[in-house]
Length: 130
Image (cartoon, helix red, strand yellow):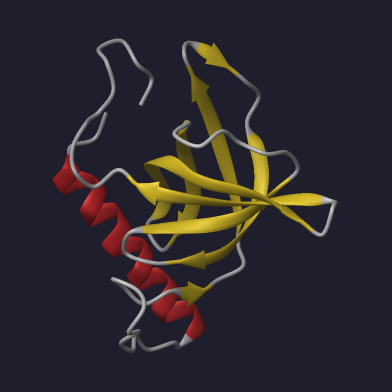
């Protein structure tokens, strides 16, 4: 499990990659703690739920911020479920542990899933894959 500082560094690296790829500049948003970049990219989501390891999901990202991201999923996920997001960035593969905060129906054919990056340190028990 990466430390909270390592996860923050991974997220900052990813945001730098998104800025370079898209040319987007951050701006303040009165409703949110951090700016959300619209960034459609392939990602792999490994699911971990009470030692029941499911096959990974292959998804496309929607928005990414310093605190989390969302993506469209072929199936719904449980609030509080632990995941590991794998993305490609400038320096290769980036893996960021996260927790599902919402999963809602998206026009009856997909689920829109929002996750919060685990930036506050490990909440996993020993022996956990994350």
